[in-house]
Image (cartoon, rainbow, N blue to C red; front, side, top):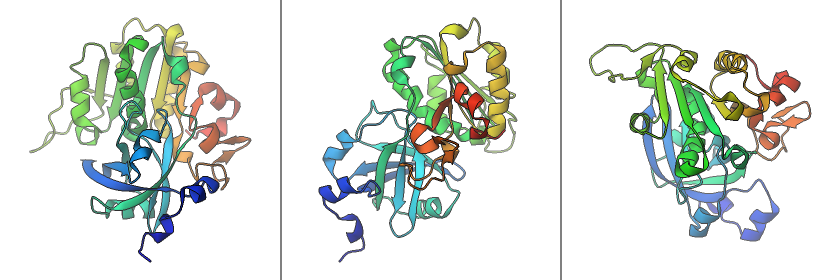
Length: 297
């Protein structure tokens, strides 16, 4: 019996147990910033690479064989099939083990889980994407989905802020987005350090909320705002959006930090009558108003 035999089960067995993952291969690891790498996976069953259907904002459970599993937001867009991309922060036993895996290793993947962004409802509207720090990882899926279906959306604005240029995720992509004419890409850092070898910085300096002053004639009645970042980030961004009179049901927040088993079995993601893994991780601000414990500022 080989060391992966416990994942070599029949299709029927997988269908009868929602906790069983499918085998996938780690095809590439791309260092991005310190302790935040992009991992690219491809299912061992070629058919699954086309059948694994997901929406921007959904997540999957990654199993490191012999160690355990962890819920991870999907960073790739469903419009580009074949490889599943996840930007993963090294922060626990499973992710530490994943960082130690060589390329071409086998892992388990089950999912996709969660509600994802209501992209069909968002079509025809303007889109404002606001990301702070690692919040760009799940929002990248939504952004690329919109860009791949550009004619179905109105004005698109991306506002992304990090502490320093060294913390910018998808740096090459961000610089490429700044050159597009069908997207307003505004980047900012809190501090642009000057030292030998430092990344040159062509964006703005300041807090992400200061980027609002550079976005003119925002049609808030026709705009969905998709927001993801650390808790303190939500406090200030939500305050700004509400002052601009954004409709509460047009403010969409990813609460990915509360994701657990993905199927509502463990109960760890439950807050009141809501399960983050099933009812979320995308919640509107209306949900937050009715259940403020969903988010901790």
